[in-house]
Amino acid sequence: MTEQGVHIQDLVMRYGEEVVLNVASLDLGAHEKYAIIGPNGAGKTTLLRILAGTLKQSEGTVDIPSGWTVGYLPQHPFVFNMSVFRNVEMAVQDAGLSRSEREKRVNEALEIVGMLDLVSARGTELSGGQAQRVTLARVFAQHHDLLLLDEPTSAMDIKGTIIVEDALKRYLDQYQATLVVCTHAPSQAQRVSNKIIVLEEGRIAEQGPTVDVLQNPQSEMVQEFLSYWRL
Image (cartoon, rainbow, N blue to C red; front, side, top):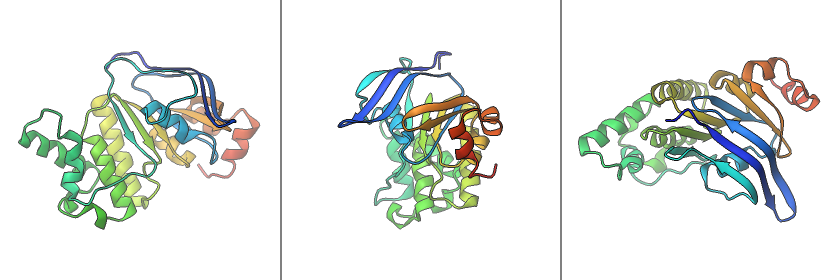
């Protein structure tokens, strides 16, 4: 991975006449861990989808360094009616790996998200939290430079959340990836990120080091938003 990061300039997303995202400028540095928080409808998922390339912006540019690979976990992940192992193996099927290398990669990814004991279960038999972990293992089975996660633990209980957050830290340490995670919980942002971006009505209301923003928010909107959470 290069030291260069992602640069966003004059980014606008419209649905009809409604502007749902308006970001004048934003830089995401290499190896940094970003959390995006804000009220429902603030534009968090829209921004992540544009970064992932699954949604084309109305205006502006998003520059991701050439050669970077991008891993994306959508807000509502999907598992297929096949074994948990095959659900994850699909991610590395065309990676030019030998069968033994694929098996090793898949088993390692399932182990770090705590799903190795269900390797033979059908994807459609899993709970929502288990399905989320399998889909995350699919992302972890590959080596990405930019990791985009949209509410990665929304369907999980406390145990599952702890397992996934620990797995995420291990992945980021191993591959020195840049993380951008959308989360509804500032407490999770505090655990997994070192920088935070707060969106309000599609605009950046505040950004900076996670601890600084969460403990000493400057804008009235962010102060009010954080007042509903116990950190």
